[in-house]
View: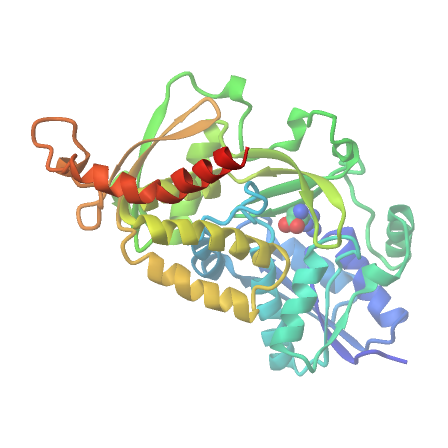
Length: 403
Ligand code: ARG
């Protein structure tokens, strides 16, 4: 029994998604498989990937440039939210999934498909993100997930592909599982599965090792408007070019590597290596500008909501009501985040060395100064502290008496 007749498959050109094509047709009776490969700035040639899908039996092979919506609609909100899953991972992979899901659904509508498919396994986060997003956007479409069900080992998958005209991967060498887009790279598996083993230098591609980084520091001024990065060193750049430049700059100074054990949605801990040079640089600079331009109480609440925002995106709830509601807070909080931050890059570090805002700085010099211009009423502190410390003094006294 066919689960769907006409299916749009998220396609990367790798073995797993390639094998999905004959598998869907031969094992699950799907009549037509239409593939979609997304350009997310990963730098792959998409034409060979497009042809590969046709060779594997796709009836139509589509490619789409999603770089600009990816950066504007997904990366920039993450920067505004200073989104770091478990305080560290800036969600470079996670952010792409709801966008791909959106496109899959749109294509399914255009071609009149009754299903969408992806090649994610049953152990990862990406399956959760795709399935939840598709279910929210198009509950009528069947989601087909061959790799979650076929139970084939890597070798069996390759052998199955070879029987259906899919060449086995040329570089049998790489033991790593890699995901790549303009926001960064994630590297898993192989020797990295031992969390006690240092990652070999070969896993990195976007960042240099600290000992290879230049001895001379480099300082860049990052301009923001309403929390969005808009310029580097005074030059106004479109969002995609800005992220590209930030990647190159931070990468050549060895900034943006991450080696962590993270908690997946499905309950397991996994060891992950990331390189997200530009995104981490922009988040750091953004945090710095917020410290100058956002009132303390808003900032305190925002820091809590940021964690929640990152969790929601990591856990596949991009299209959920809570994420939407928090977005409302985030947008409002960014109205004053205008100005610029100077970041110094040196030997694996990115350090803020200056911040300014002509319109929204809350830093009031004659309040902050220890000099003669001081306008702060020092005597007023006494009454404030009397009231502020009252409950602490009272409870301490009671405890003392109680012995
Ligand atoms: N652990 C990261 C995340 O969940 C990276 C996932 C990489 N995905 C992949 N298919 N290789 O966002």
